[in-house]
Length: 319
Length: 254
Image (tube, rainbow over all chains, first blue to last red; front, side):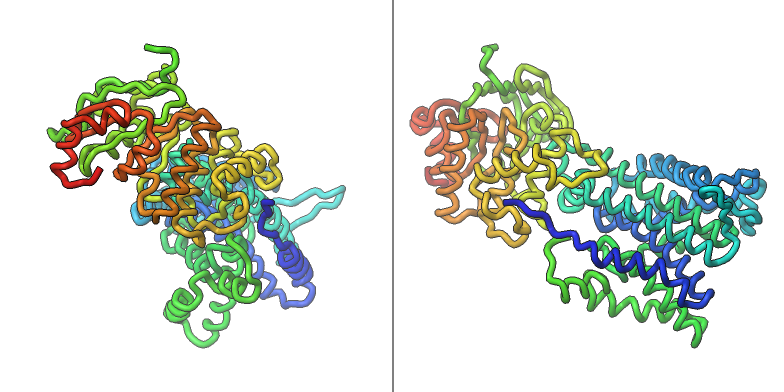
């Protein structure tokens, strides 16, 4: 009879508990770093919906991250303080932008797709960089008031790093759970089918273009959500979020962690930031060392650090 | 038009610039018929298939499926209308399991391809139909295997299952035995015979292996330099001098 790959939920459950308890034992500085890892991890897992599952390398994810961040900053400046409204608005703006960018991009493949998404990303970067009145130009948009949350009569604020961490933790946990559902849904299987063979998908009745636009929009929406979180965490939305070099971060994280495993990119984000912390103590040229580290990873961990180790120690089937 | 015709092609032509690859092809295939399209290499068989299956629109002529004009529809719409095809070079989802390969067409057929939740393995409508299809082609025992690890002949069977999953009214098979060893070829012939008998599906195959053609087809169409040279029963085609000439000219043994 047909059986599915056993989804081992023990690892994710353990990880969740560790992340829940971490702020109790680690210094505040590392709590803040962990928040950043989770936010960038969400961005990387969202990107991997395209890269690992659909087989599309997008170099423009920074645009959607930035749109989420600017949406949050603008709403906060305008006096909106409802947390849910801001999170959803950031996602929605990113979703709509991704629908438009996706519409023009998904007919292309591989390097052409990467270049057109990079082009769109840089367009958004230029707008954010030059439209002084709205975006504050290269200075970015500062955020002074954070939204609060009324939870059963308690007014929760997020001004302390610990409270901010738990906000990030809960939102990222929900978002990644939703992405997990999507990846394992019928839609998710069709995405993998397109990665394997898009011609065959169209010859079993699938409209490849529409399906890819849907994947692109979903990825963009969750990237936008990560952008909102980063704006709250960082108290700032800046045009750098939309620069192509920022878009390359989730790609590097996914490759470090492994594109073939659902949580690989999240681990990649962790490795990325922790390496940065360690190296930066010794030298300012951390990018040089990132390059030196990236090369053996690509050579010796073809499925990413997490993917290769997992396959080595837990012989598992296909992703 | 007879009520029983399932695929009707009128004056079909396709050209690249001034070069006419196929020209003026008209034929009518009856329901449940087993037909074959043959012709020397370069006769235009694959172009003909691509033009009627939506890979690209033909530059001339009309295609009717079950009486409905499907000329120029994109491939996914042609499949929706009930015509599915295989390819000369195996066209499957290599890194997925055998079961998942057959799930994909069923998900699309049942309009669940935008469903963002729920596990396909828990969807009885899909798993039962997939199991049926896989048993039909003899892969019932290997559902969990990743397709990349299968032998070549079994990969061809996976493609067969993908093509059959949606119960198409017309199945186009582009050289279904290409690259197979004699045993695999024999199995494939028997499988196609069995499927045609049990399901009443209309098969339209191209083949260059004459043994396969003559052991399968009830009706044969011969394509030569882009034109339909002859059509008829296997006996008629065997006896046709023009056909012999076309083939003997190219030293292919019939």
